[in-house]
Length: 347
Image 1: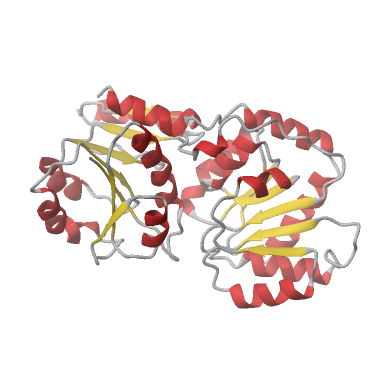
Image 2 (image 1 turned 45 degrees about the vertical axis):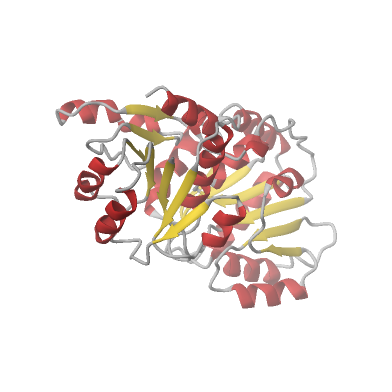
């Protein structure tokens, strides 16, 4: 049995759970039983809709040590073959107490944590090699776990494999705007208001804007604006995004896991930072010439204007969009989850 310990809610977004679901799909294809353990039931129905069982602990997602006794009781009758943890709230004490109750332990990381006593560490980010995991383990006198590093291990759903090469048109007709699962800086609403003020929705010759809003606190006001503007389309809780990615000629996205899906589809992208854990990714995509970065937009009143100015720049330069698209496709091929499952089978 493979156990996944991850959480998703309107405070931390959905990314941890969604990437674990992709890894679970890869194990499931190999005949493995997969179980998800959650602190709260926020994403339980979504996980079960993918065919996986859930255990909801009723604990705090941000204080994982409180759940140790519950996990020990859960595992006492059957040790998991693997427990895969994906959380920013893992502690060394937590791992130490869980270790005796599982055969193999793995962590998904993107912050350079050299966790002790684990068998594998997954960091699929573009910047993973620069975090010197092996050196950190050796300096601490620890054994080095199996390291699965870089975007070849990006755990995307099967549908992102071998996506046909994207046609980059001279004229941009559809633009995707993704502001993350929770949009803590209210960028979606502020950007919509800015575009409405400058007439971006009133000209029939201008692109249609497709907003992904997730668990957005401004949802009611956003939906009201969408009713007034036919050039503004809003999506909440779509089961899959591939078709929308393929439809759109340009994307604007916070620097989270969405960037790797956009790479697989070759969608030219403008990216920005809305959380500390996105800083390294944003910089890496920019420095490697894969995307246009706006940097950190938190506490920046000019953020809506900056985003729209970048959109105008990208729409007017099809050569730049073509260059980005080709480079993005070379980074992610959609087989990352299978590579993870295969690597674990050899440990």
